[in-house]
Length: 310
Ligand SMILES: C[S@@+](CC[C@H](N)C(=O)[O-])C[C@H]1O[C@@H](n2cnc3c(N)ncnc32)[C@H](O)[C@@H]1O
Image (cartoon, rainbow, N blue to C red; front, side):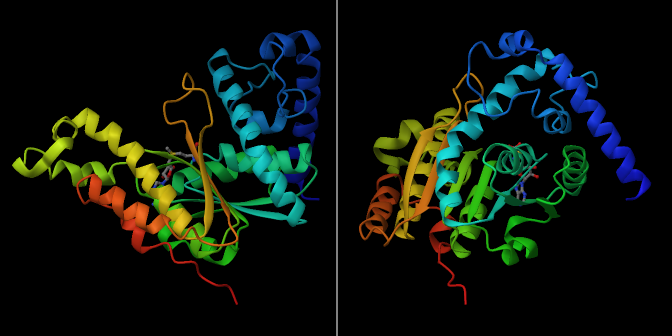
């Protein structure tokens, strides 16, 4: 064992002991107010420290309580979808597309190891190299190096993702068309589960902006002519189009509110699981929706081609 590994292990043991001493039943109850959570501070001290949710003395900064509750809620919502992957695969491989500072990446790997007792390996991909460096630092603190790896790359050019053959692809708030990149990647690699929480859906709004002010704009002119309404409406129509395209590509799809809106307004989760056959009517419904909303569609419509692995 190298000296730095021994030092890290000693620090980890000391920190876990500190967290156990700090997170008494009373303090834990004051934090949780009776909520049942998967990730309790006394058990997940290294993970929460890595994610910046515990101080060096193992207390939780008041400003981080909301984030802590949010991540627990998120994993709880995703749990049932992972139960099915667990039933099918002895080791689950996930791709976290646009992983940012790796909250979900590390949470899922940790829950696999410590809650579900079923290994989950996660590849996190993000185009920002500084963020990926921070992810690697966090992973080492959490002690999850054997389960988690990262690549600094754009999703549509990620060599590691193309070689990963993930069972599931997740993308939490991958901005604008990066969510479509994640879906295209997941469908192309024949992932069984896709779970994306979109944000900043701007592609349709850009197309609709070109229609604003035209005499031919029709009934939707009040929306196209009002930038705020255009953006808000486009976000929902974008997600409806994504759902139809996924159905046409052979997935059964649901959209749910995955964290209460007091945590974030970007709280729609599109969850898609591979279906026995594509929905034969979905492409027609997509085309009808595009026609009804000004004729502007998503570039994704040309990208969802399942790629058969040899
Ligand atoms: C709002 S952050 C969300 C990060 C993380 N998923 C989370 O929820 O904490 C979006 C991340 O997606 C990354 N991103 C955006 N477009 C991308 C693309 N085309 N390829 C790879 N990463 C991308 C950004 O660098 C950023 O870190």
